[in-house]
Image (cartoon, rainbow, N blue to C red):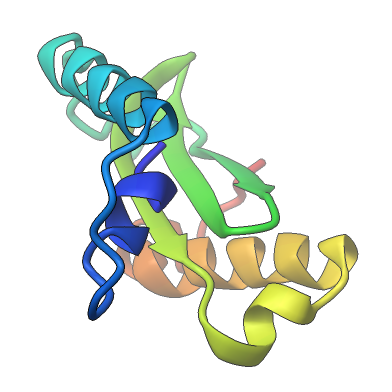
Length: 109
């Protein structure tokens, strides 16, 4: 969602377009409609969902279909050129490192 807006922050690159307007509207909608996060229950199984695209990755830690926390990361440099399967693995590694305290010593999906 934020990639077109982030691109506007580069030196001498600020040029507002219809794509930037659409991105801005999507960002406003996402911020205003954020789901209520669940409190982790360590007696239940954690679920890690990961996704990667050409420009970044997103991961969600959940239990019983309810999100506990979200993370995202925008790819930079050589990471942008990596194949999708490597980006997907980067998403998994990012999630496991980020949520190690929740996941260590537990089975998770």
